[in-house]
Image (spheres, helix red, strand yellow):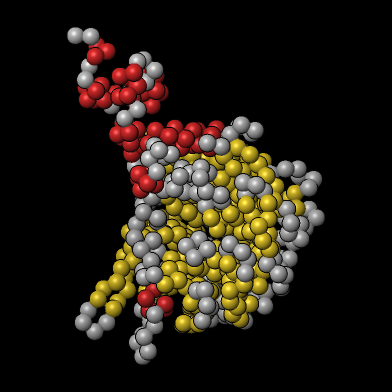
Length: 472
């Protein structure tokens, strides 16, 4: 029997053993092999084997334009470019200028993600400045889309991509929300706090804005109307500068970094967003003090890691808790079960430790110029020394880690699943921010699936953004 006359089903079965390069080569052999190699099921299996999840609904909605093969080839090409980082070929870099003061915050309003077609969206990034303005940028074109009217120096900003809303607070405590598409002002609220910590939060189809104040109060406002729903004193006279929500949306963490004697407090989100008259607020002080940083592990519903003081010598430790709610007939009792705890071997003394997490068991901690990676049980699995000056910002996603430093460089590291070692992180390349005569260093970094945006402190006081957009 002629081997080129095998039935289509047999060819498809054989081709399941090929990788993408061999599959493409086989498609050029003859008409029958081409038909078999183009089978969507083969490319779907390659996608699911490599990434675990792909946007099936989008591929099915427009099968002529979006095929599994096209998805696989373009996404793998994008990831290859993001891993190699060759200037001029793998990405384009644009400088976004227009602020007349220091950039105090940057955040994506519209972003690409792995569950979208990662080459189809136009990312929009918002920035806030001490010049009193919020600006929205199209980072592909490098143009300013809109700017808010000037107000007092801004101290905090964040975005809510779900509502397409931007929020910011100024030095007088005025909090404003704007429409993300147009910059139209939606609402204003006066908190009376010279420094505010902001957190957008959604639950059961409703949206909220959490505000941490200078005097240690937690305010819960409706969004986008900014009506006050509840107010709770967390740490009297100390700034509430840590606000986080759990992945399952059931818990809000609050903490102050300004006192070694204060304990972080967690609130059951229902009790602060939808308070019931004459009912006690459901909350719990964690059994640690001196919070330096905290993060919820993204692949667990309510697993919280906290860096805190340990002992009289200011030794730092990391403790992991699982949060839960025990319900009885008459009350609801929050519980924090300790999962792990270990001391951190930090070589630099510094106040701003950055803590991030990957999956359900990988912890990343900045230590001066260094980035350290721990397992949940405290084993140090990597220590990267890529920077000459302290790391000031850190961005972590499922594909890579990006560190920003005062040495005017970003370092890109990528995740890899090793058969023997499990999940590992590999240092890849630097992205440079320009001339040291014009700039003092990077101050913040954020990223989506296909781009990186960072703020650069300028010598003349007019900070700029650098946008690195990777090609697919």
